[in-house]
Image 1 (cartoon, rainbow, N blue to C red):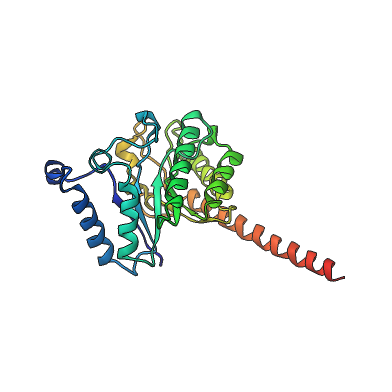
Image 2 (cartoon, rainbow, N blue to C red):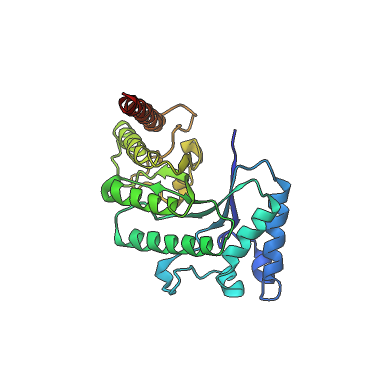
Amino acid sequence: MLVGATHLVWHEYMPQWLEEKLNKQNAEQILLQHINKVVTRYAKKIHFWSVVNEAILTSDKRPDGLRKTPWLELLGPDYIEMAFRAAAAADPQALLLYNDNALEDDIPYHDERRAAVLKWLERLKSKDTPIHGLGLQSHIGKLDNFSPKKLKTFLRDVASLGLKSIITEMDVGDAGMPTDIKVRDRMVAEVYKQFLSVVLEEPAVLGAITWGLSDKYTWLSNYAPREDGTPVSSLPYDAEMNRKLAWNGIALAFEHLKQRRKSSKLWLAWRRLQTQV
């Protein structure tokens, strides 16, 4: 089983001792020691690392699109490149990703974020930074603002830089969906199927990971509870670890991909035969 690990650098959930101790004099040393110690411990066991998470926030109104964080304040924009180089040195075999959210919808805010992320990926590649791909969190809900064409274009722009993409934290928030659990589960399953059927068609997308397996442990129960008080239904398994329709929706997306690839191979074989004739 391949294992992905998250996150080496993030501005959230920093321990209190670190917030109290961190300053301009020790920030680089602390950052590099942390990355080296963690990555070296699990070297050759981790398929990919989410090296830097959520470093971009266009609403912070910086010209470079970066989020105002302690790492940016103390080390400047180069902390991102610094983190990738440290991770690559600690485990040259692992795939190294930049990970972020709010990249999927066809709304102005997501348009801004896609442009900012792409700009930073281009900058990192231009400096020969050891980055191998982009992680799209894909915490999504109803597909009211979903544009397959726009997301495919973004994924292809990322691929044009020689980078892969992975859906790293997918779940489907059911806020605004009906109380009836049967109806809601059908809607959630359809979101999984439609979204994954689109993104998995792109050759540079390596795969998709859900942010948990069971509704019993979904973070959305606390972060985005339903107004009607019913349990959140966002993952492939229910609270008793029984498969839900969401599991089927995911399976159908992968089966759809399998059939498309099979048809593509048959078409190519037919074209070769026509050429030979």
